[in-house]
Length: 348
Image (tube, rainbow, N blue to C red):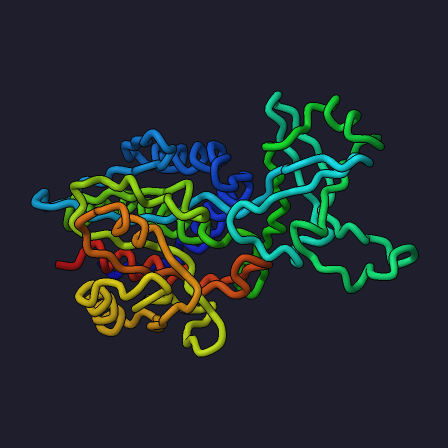
């Protein structure tokens, strides 16, 4: 099922922008899941949600003898209010592992339990170069950064009157852009770029009137960034292909213009036969790919294994630069990812 993906360049970019337009740190993902479900149902696919909120898209195959799974995650990194200072600033705790120094100066939204949304800015606790001696050198971490709310408040009590309290989510801007040279740059390409690739795959199948070889379940998970998104995959799956970002950096071969096939990450090796099959499919069909070992990484496939799922698993994804910071990938990497997904779905 080697497709010409080039006509779907705008599709994958548009799907990515829709998903990236929804704030969805782990535990606060309803908007992103709703958006993905609307796309999938609009293409004619049936869906279901589990109790945790994971969305599964059901794709009937030509052969019903087994069921294979693919997954990506639509939850992202984020922050949560942990306390309010005496002068009315919000101290935060991390959701997942955002690189805190990259958040200094970022605009954000604070979502309250009563449905109100306030804006603010994430700043160092020494934000003024004309005042604080350590404005340039103070550590940028949870203990030394806070949110300045865009409301006239000067005390903890005034903040509480707004309805802002510990446990409220703080979501920062993605700054999503598509450049004329083909780059998609945004926070949270990990892993909404991969989710967009899966949704694009579904559109291509529908447009061409094709079906995967086997019954297929595509699941978009909502707790990957905090380590338990893939714990509730169907017991019917015989194998699972996780589609998550490909790593770029020291000792790694992958570029933003390629799809990465991960042989091993920090949780150990992926299924040898599946990885070999993906490599062969890429080689035989001219897909631009790299095989790498990721030093600081685990996926929903790892979680599935640790939760006791008897399933073979492998991991691929578009090459993403500057993970957990200001991320970037390229159209060619997204294209190669969709190509490899299509080949996998049609392979023996």
